[in-house]
Length: 121
Image 1 (cartoon, helix red, strand yellow):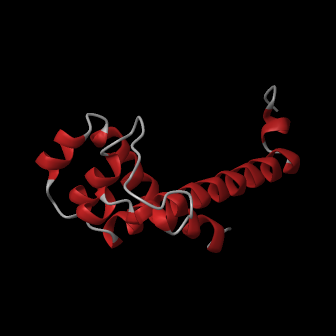
Image 2 (cartoon, rainbow, N blue to C red):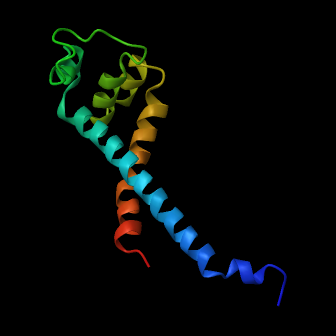
């Protein structure tokens, strides 16, 4: 028997690996659902509604025009990006591409995480 072969095949090691995979799948699912919610909101509101602050009105925090923030233009950029107007979205905020691609990649994690959680071995 090779040195360390007993510890690699031990049931304790396999169980901890299985739980780690499940925990990671839960994190992927939660983060993916948040990203999917962000994309659904960007698809729901058009850029003019976002510029008027309607995307924040349901929170009760902002009642008038959007006050702006360091990520100003990113919400409108997401709305334009989901409508295929990538050039205009890139002009609104230079950070559009990293955030948009991260949100799309996060949303793709939802079915992958569900596959791991539902069809576990």
